[in-house]
Amino acid sequence: MKKVFISGGGTGGHFYPALSVAENLKEKGFSITYIGTTNGIENKKDFPADEKILYPMRAVRGKSIIGKIQGVFSLLSTTFKVYKQIKKEKPDFSICFGGYTSIPLGLASFLAKVPLYIHEQNSIPSYSNKILSYFAKKVFITFELTAKYFNRKKTVLTGMPLRKNIIERAKNYVYKPNQTKTVLVVGGSQGAKKLSESTISLASEMKDIKFILIKGKWQVEVPNLENLTVYEYVDNMEDLYTSADVVISRSGSSSVNEILCFGKYAIFVPFPYAASNHQYYNVKWLKDLGLCELIEEKDLSKEVLKKALEDTFNKDLESLSKKIKEYAIFDSD
Image 1: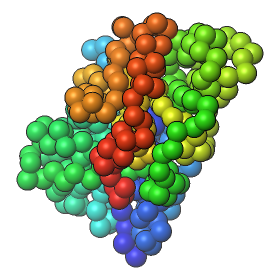
Image 2: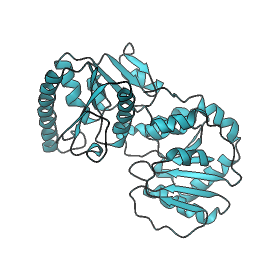
Image 3: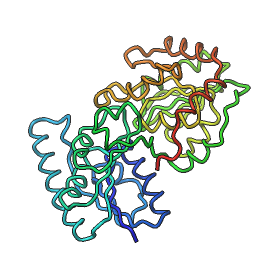
């Protein structure tokens, strides 16, 4: 039985693509060991691994000087522990999905002479993947524009590994306009308070449009409106994508690629504090092609969103959907 070590966590952006690939490898008979942190999303979520090892790692970026020093020592200490685990279990290869939690597995794999592969989800790479790319055999990328940040001989355009239920539903899905215009609003894994508030205000004005809002963790006052349905979180995103004419969303890589797979015309509002402003660049190329709208958070208001929606519903969404879907990659895992 082939054995693989996988790391990718801390946040959903790194965890979920790792999960998708792990599920695929598990079906093919691989033995999987997952390396993560006790401080991340992986501590609360199941992972299809034969062995799940979580260490108390610390991040380095965005910390004080003392915090950075503690973070470096934490990662080096974990690297030593992972190295011992690798020497014991002798995996055939390792895969890292970025984020600080990937650094120990990446470095330990290199030191133990185990083939290392990395996947970069965003348009602008994380510092961890930039470091690990020097030791990796191949660098799998989600967006073509990301190749310039790595050794081009190593890069392979694979797209974003997505959940199996999303891919299976999206492959044969063909968009047809709803009788009642329907807008799906997705705030991302952390939610988006300003976007949620603007949506609720819009719903009270645009009564002819049905709004479905996934608000995330934020507590916002939700009025009783017939044309507004609000969820904190959902597991059946594929059902909501197929029910919508238009999507308003943050532009994390998973969301962008799910939207591409379903061929949805979207109004993107990038999270302004994402590292290197990568959420903006995740969709700028799509905006340049005329296949989405892009509103920066600083410009977001009910009025701006209303104008964008009105303009969007004046477009030929059925024709645009076919063009958008051409940029989807369905076999990323």
